[in-house]
Image (spheres, one colour):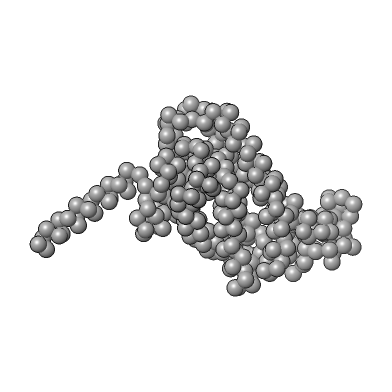
Length: 304
């Protein structure tokens, strides 16, 4: 195992490419991605700075990179038939205003969390070394993190719909009753921090208990969580949408109703909390409730 720290300083060169050549020469057992990773930390000679810059670049690239296709889709009339709220298409001004405020939030609120990420990870024992963990290990850990985050999100989100919290915190996010991709992180600083804590708490708790988590696994989880949040706010329902293949998956069809009706469907990734606690929203949920009431009334009549 090779530590991605300043202990490898003799291999550091004046350029990143030069450092990579040294790493490539000395650590032939590593794969290409692992060499890139090790060369980055060796070249930077400052783990906090290396992780901070990498985390910031990853977050911005993924958030705006994943939002861009939805911006393009909103501009193409052919896709209107897949738009859930077809009469509410975001204007260019709304998308620009939303992107500007999200970017401001990233570089004022979230940058503090991103910059403190490495010391936080080190404190709880997250691994930053190479080689990387196996794909199988990362997959089952990420699955656990999604379940933990969804639980946090359900209760935190539901709490934010309590009158005082809604008016002072959550109302900003509901400015758009028909959401679009860029609006996934359009929220007050308090909400950004609360939900952000939910994203990192699961992996941190897991690491604190097991002492077995690589920061790369956490990166993959955050990337996938960003994809989920942006896609859930896209406002589009396709025949190939994931919930058609995984019935417990939430997605845009689930979350769009929440924005339209301002209540119910509080979960982020999955549907089970809303189903179990009877907080589902939409016509199908209303139909099921009516059928249950009819069945209950019929059962009471039989007893009488």
